[in-house]
Image (cartoon, rainbow, N blue to C red):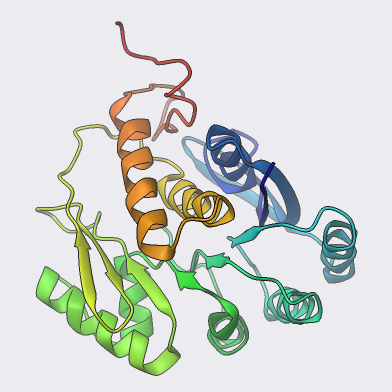
Length: 264
């Protein structure tokens, strides 16, 4: 069985973070492992608390994984400090880890910054060079390129700038555009993955799930392009299933292929 590791924060309600990642790995037939970077108190209504795991504990978690069940791919999610970012980068280099998917969790869905400036600098200088692909949303892409993005043409301009500066594959997620949900894969050439908005407000954890699906596909041996294509199809199915849990923005059905919320 292929293996994948998520390095991320937790979501006790199960919709995002490492819980969503592990469900996604399982849905793809990949054995999932996790290293916890922070413990959050959150649900479909919002986040009420965050407790960062001590950096030394993050390091020993990674040592335990890399010296025993070595992952075929790694997904990196929420990282709260430059100290944790630098520790993870050191371990990825030490163990020569491959197939790294970096979900650039810098800005919340509502547009609020989640990382301090020093942590953003550490993320871009230490982890971007190690990543096989990064997956910024529009808000995060705007931070990385320095200008606003309102159209698909501006997405291409942003992708060109980010790629030329950081030299890594990137998938800019277009879900926050008003008229489309198309995503842009850029590696020197632009490749669009077309998508239409699905009328479902329950999309909590979509970014986490997409990046972990890409990691699962890389673990299974697919290349970057095929991994993104397969993952987009998976995400569309998980949202289209119309699962409705909680009093706020609810989660996807990560296991929709096996049991569906829809009436047959």
